Image (cartoon, rainbow, N blue to C red; front, side, top):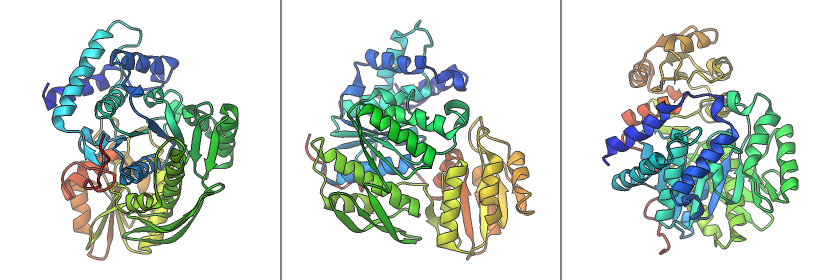
Length: 452
């Protein structure tokens, strides 16, 4: 199988079923279990950490992987969506799955899907297939740990077939409401579906109703719950254009003067959760010293998360795509870059709360360049522009994201700020244009890995 054939197969699964809430039924998880059965149950082949939530789960997953890798372990990281190359979703010790391995495992996946033909609800979705591909890769590569980011919700997500050593729930907010519900209690009830009886759970500070759902579920499961803001405390020392400095205090020790090269106070909270996971893994046979925590966080690469990719003018790329993440982006822009004139390049998918996003970030922008995300579900640039005109009269429409950022750069002065956001499908092509290449996460690749 060639790379193009592998991509064609996976994208064919994306087109095989219409998107919508009908996919979020108990049949969804049963279909995933059957796919794993056809593949020899690769989801059982590695110890796992499962990370759910609305905001911060990707960054938290990357931090966990980087810390445990820095302790000398071989760590798989499965995240979604990708920015440029689908292989970004499958990484071991910060390195993308090799093309030949990706093609070979996709060939096995295609054969398994063919063997399952005729079952109710078949074939699997694209999202189920790529999750199964990650599990195959981690098992065949004999990783010491797989850090797995949940897609939507948790209870019925394809990733929930793994049996996590630690379950993680990051900030819960409103997104994908057409699938997981329109009330915070409903959304939280889906996320807590990744807990296990007598398991270990780490969560961050939550809205009151979400915190209540998490605490009730943990008691019901007899799970050990560790909460950032309670059992774990953190204090942000500095947020600057080069990263965030902070201190974390757990029941075991104080981690003083930590640094992560990601911008924002929210990243200190994510890091506190990652440290909570590292300590919980200590009870599961992993040895993660303080030096690994420091090295893993300090060496982290996590592209397009309020990432400064150019100076003069400053260009920031962020994958903010819902109201929760745009509030965080706005807070960082205000704190770190003050009154600097901002040119916003934005494209949004049709399922998002565009009016809410515009209310949050629109007043910050002196100029908005509305564009179209590289996705069939994208809103038109004209729709995006209309939502922002009440906040700024200076709005331009440029259909292609790369052309849009070039328009923004021409309009921005050397002391201005250009911010690109709204979707992975805007951030990805723009980052590839400005920086080049697919994006690898985790600690630096030269971090030594323990022998298998």
